[in-house]
Image 1 (cartoon, helix red, strand yellow):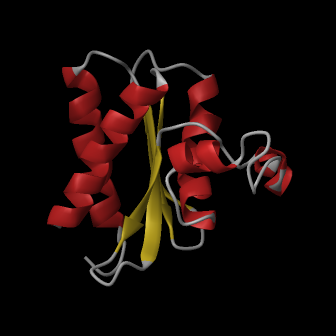
Image 2 (cartoon, helix red, strand yellow):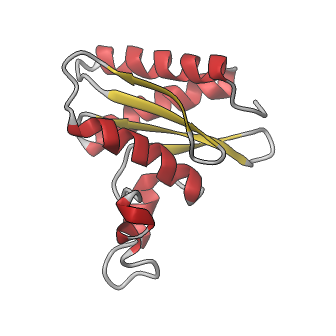
Image 3 (tube, helix red, strand yellow):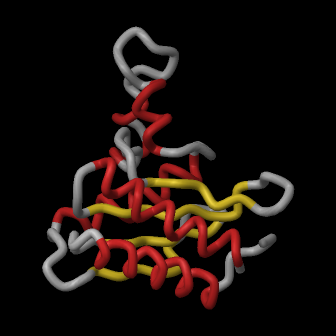
Length: 137
């Protein structure tokens, strides 16, 4: 895939929602474009209110830094090269798992998906379902 469209963003959300339903965890799912702007968002029934902003910010973080939010966590720990990164960008940088960049066939980041509502591992699992849908589109 080379460009993120609204139709593709809907496919990402649908795939992520199906996975969240499979693991029985209501989630908020956000898809951002290459500028970190929201393209699609879905809050499943019962998803935590706090997860709305967290999912959006995970998508933004994965685009803005062109890396998974789990990796952001690793490089922003005390003593690491990007310690304090989570306090930048008006607090929008998320430093735990659940945000994944969307890359075109050349490896260029063209968007991101952010998922929140479960544990960080559950969020990553659901976000990966969204990335898989993007890769298949």
